[in-house]
Image (cartoon, rainbow, N blue to C red):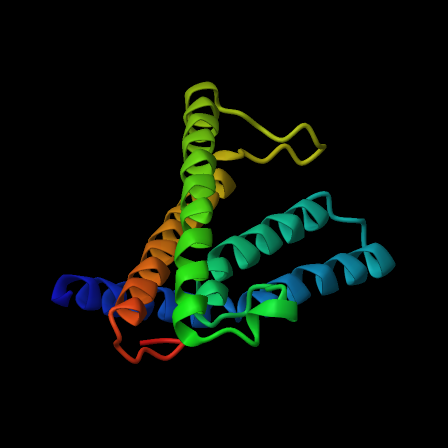
Length: 172
């Protein structure tokens, strides 16, 4: 159990730090979209702004996902869940997080194949700007891996709760 507690503490700390840092990505997106508006109004329209804003949004969401899971910000059907005991919630969460872990493993496998293809063949976006796609695919792989680590951390928290330890839902 000490190993689980240590794992949860380390992964939660890493994802909390990354999540807090990525929160400022909203300002990056705002800056890109502001430049897009200014350049379209006063200069020639930029080819890169829309796609770069999409890349920034992908990074914002995928790297913020583990922090969102950690904070309990995910959507949950509270019709029944809210009335359950802590033990029943922990059992339900432990079972459902296993499905999330399987899903993330499949996504990670597919993402790795896609990244390998992108690196091997120099894949580019089919737009006028034509950026390489491997940087955003790398960010997606990192985000999925961090989300998998956070899902395992949530499973560890559920196991500790089932053993009778009092662990806050938000963070350890």
